Length: 188
Image (tube, helix red, strand yellow):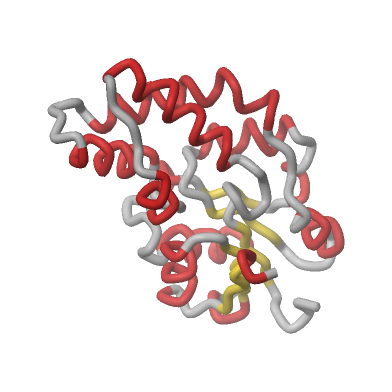
């Protein structure tokens, strides 16, 4: 299926794991404290972005003076309270299982590194991946290619020999900018 590629790189949220509903609930829980809300379509458009960038967009929309890093930290804390009880792998995990031991694989996510590691461990799937690159591991986030280029480096595969599995426009732009093939999992 993907045998023509030497390395497989997976986005996490919405691609490998069904985390989107839980992320939205965490945002609702935190934003209600400030009498704020989020626009669902705007949030989808920011998929793949680090949490502080999403917080920045929400704050801007509400013309608030909140610190986006503080709001992002509150959202991450709220997420941790509910995430481990609700998230399950998506069907793409079958591709991961099939290629385990056959191709080096990495996770390149807009989530914080520690959160990604903890979640993958909790679900018993961390061992499938040679590397995990989170938002706090890079300085230039999706749609910039740094996340996926770092993944390729860590798994020891040239970027042009990698395929990225993504569910967000920013991630697809990042894969393209990295010179990698991509699979838009929204079309599967």
